[in-house]
Length: 347
View (cartoon, rainbow, N blue to C red):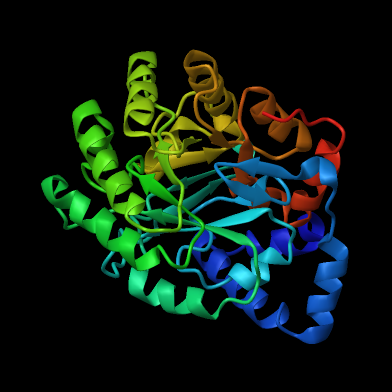
């Protein structure tokens, strides 16, 4: 139904408008008792083979919704009905910010990909906290946090700590996002010494709370092997809990979409099928090189159960989806889970 009816209608709209339309429909329809019951029945599927315990948290299944879809924690209860094992909100910043000028989200249908330069548009961490206080579902929620655009890198730590303290009672794990290509100079924080200082400080702050919240680092797919070696060393030294591999890429190699159109779109992070191979390579490198020293959440180019299994076989403990759901529809989550039953090996 999605691919033959809903998707063609949504794809007549520009991507950001389609996103807001989808949000509005989900918010209204999923809270109608009859529709809610139908959705729960249609998308319900769990199996003991899918259950996983990772960094001290118990996941009913390994399929998560990646950050970026529900930036402001507006649809946690509604999206939980689709069968995700966990949902990641954000990226959230201390102050609300509008993000980059529009247009800033683009489809590449030939490649089943997206290019975005959203720029951490969000309503601020305080507003998200108020919504989190009211959520009813028990689904695991991750808080993806970043710095405001106007915060210089030498004060970035202040932003991360602010959001950490605000969110700590209301999320189950944290993601330190230093890998978005859409905030000026943010990726400089991935360099070895700045990153080490940042993670040591965040981990120290988190350790002061009596209840543990795992700290994860989200990295770019564009890092060299030497930089990935640095990531392994930093994660081990700072004793954070894991890595999310990977964010969007700034490269444009291998696209079927014409160079002219891609050039016209301009800057932004590329996601979708084109990222599947590289994200899997990064996962395999991190897990094999480190001797599985820490868990990795795999994200990038997952459209089918085989795609998810590829990430898990490469060493990922969990996976996340976003762009694949835009092209395949929400039923993809159930298909992934059904396709994984009987084929998973605990990592």
